[in-house]
Image 1 (spheres, one colour):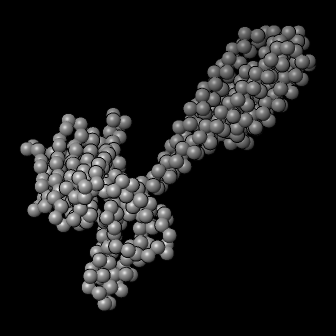
Image 2 (tube, rainbow, N blue to C red):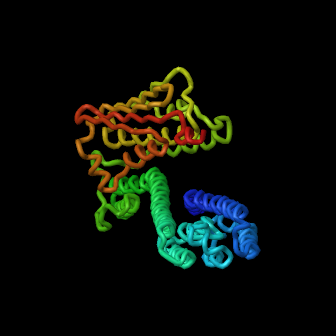
Image 3 (cartoon, rainbow, N blue to C red):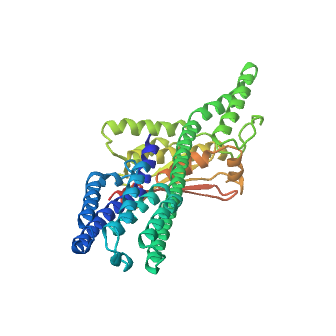
Length: 419
C-alpha cells in the first residue's frame, strides 16, 4: 500500500504541473481570443454570428475548465468535443468574417486557443495522439484560408511540431517515472529481505548450528538430529543468500573465517532497548549500558566517562553488530583469544571498535563465505550499519588479529532532508 501511494505521488508530481499549465494556457488564450474579437467586432461581416460562437466558447470554458486540471478528469471524449469546438470556430471564421480579412491573414475565431485542445491530446495520449489531433487542425486552417499561404503553413507546422514534441517528452517522463517506481520497489523489497535475513541469521541459524555441533559431540540419535539440523541450516542459508548455493550442498561444520550466527547478546540488546524505549530510555539510549554486558574475562570494555547518547533503534542495531563481531571472535579466534571493545564519542558520529588477538582472517575468506551463504559480516554487521547510514570497516592481518570499526552518525539518515 505504501509503495502504491508513493508510485501515485511520483506520477502526479510529473503530470500535475503539465495539466495546471494547460489549464492556465486555455484561460489566458480564451481571454486573448475575446480581446481580439472585441477589438475587431465592427469589422466582421456577421458580428452577431461571431459573438454567438464566442459566447458558446466562453460558456464551454466556464463549465469545463476544471476538466483539464488532472488526467482523471480529462477524458478522451472530453478532448474530442473540445477539439470539435475549436475546429468549428476555425471553419466558421470565413462565414462570419469578411473575405478581405480572411485573405489578409486575420485571426480565426478561437485564435491560438485551438492549440490548447491539441496539447490536451499530447499530454493525455503522447505524441501519436498529438499528431492525430494536429492533422484536422491543419486541414481546417488551410480550408479557412483557402490556400497554402506562408503564414498559415508556418502556424500549422508550429502547432504540429510543438504538440508532437510535448507528447514525446510526456511519454519519456512517464517511462522514467515507471523505471523509478520499479527501482524503489526493488530497493524496498531488498531492504525488507535484508532485515528478515538479519533476524533469521541472529536467531534460527544460531540454534540450528548449535544443534548440529552438539549432536555431533553427543553422537547416537543426537548425531542424526544434528545432521538434519545442519541440512536445514544449509537450506535456510540458501534462502537468505538468494539461492547462491546449490540445494544439494551437504552440511558441514563452520570453517575458520565463515560468518557464524550472532550471539544471543545481540538479540538481548534489541529487547533491552525496546523495553527502555517504553520506560526510562525514551527516544535515546546510552550506548554504554547496552555494550557493558559484553565485557567479561576475555572481553575488555573501554568507554568514555560521559553518556554516549544515540537513538534507541540505532543503539540497538549498533549493539547487535558488536555482538555479531564478538561472536566471530569466540567462534574463530579460539577460546583463549582476547577481545577489546573501544567506544569513541565524536561530535558527529559514534565509533565502536572491536579488536581481537586471534589468528586473523585469510585474504578473500570473507568473500568466499558470502558466496557460500554465510552472511554474518554481510548481514549482521555491514547491513545493519548501512541501514543506519553508517559504515563497517574490517581490517584483518593473518597472525595479527582482526579489527572491526563500526561508525554510526549521530544525525539520523534523512533528517536533513526533512528540514
